[in-house]
Image (tube, rainbow, N blue to C red; front, side, top):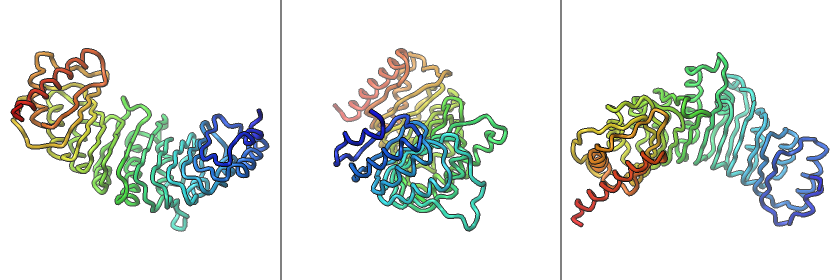
Length: 353
């Protein structure tokens, strides 16, 4: 059946529709959308997977009661303003494709992008394009934000330049949503090889937020990780991938987590290696319940003979652990299984069971 004729199969109570690889021919999409507005005027959730045209978006945005919208393609500033004008929109997923960056600095008389009702916002694309659109955003009450960066090999998009773009995004986030944002996810297209720059400006913006969940899906040095900890003390659920984490500082990082991030209940940590430190004894109570160890290609699990020392150090730092495991291979999984079993024994002894 041709696309324009499919709405005759829909119920008037239809609230959700998803289109895949839509034909962007205006003569096809226009009658389909017109029929949709007549048959299912209460549509609330609209997803178009695959790149689509601005003409398609214009028809979608005529459903003024939409609460969820997912689009991908080449955007311009007017497109974002029209999306932001949807009065009931609560969740937005945008893939900017090859959208070019806007002007480096918005003119003083430029109209802003104001998502007044939006709560969940996910945006992916070239980091420089994303940052340029963020510079136009103002106000709103976003609680859940995800930024997915796709890198492009261009001279003007070097690592230092990318640091500036991440800092700009975080500055806008802290300015607009410091009082409302609770979950933040920052992703790189190649998390195993691409670094997330935790610069002083970046860390300062993080300190302005009161996050409960933070996912840093990119390479972070152990030193940078320690520097950012005082800025994320409110976080309860943290996922971070450490690199350059030597045997000497892997335990030091965990010790810093126990000291600075006292609200943590779930920690997923990527490590290159793990040391077996001399335990300094219990450091106090901590809320951490779940510890997941991830690894990269350089990961070497501790010597099996050191399982007792690792378990003792973790128990001293996080006495309330309920889960300790790894997402990696059999040998590593067995090691952490033994660590967890010993921790449970320590807990039983402490409680006098």
